[in-house]
Image (cartoon, rainbow, N blue to C red):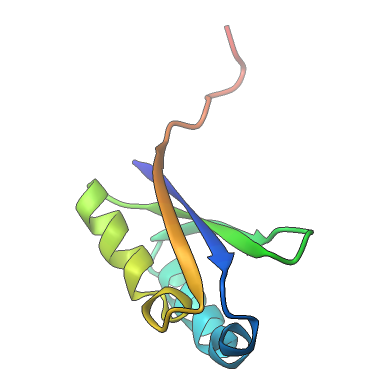
Amino acid sequence: MHYVAILTIVDAELNARVRPAHLDYLNRLYKENKVVMAGPFMDGKGGMVIYRAESPEEARRLAEADPVVAEGARTLELREWNPLQFPLS
């Protein structure tokens, strides 16, 4: 299953300090096949991560362990996502 994490910056200074650890964390999870893709929003107010997890609980554990969330630099909104399969019928 896929889960989308919306990560909104609430402390820009803290976010800048924690960002290297955030990127390392996402890179590690990508190598473990737990992150499908991730990236910042163009308005500079945060970003999104798409997780691959077996359950909502696993997805929440992964998202809450992200350093930007764990350190309080960003808020977390986590939602289950059902990507469409193409071609559509």
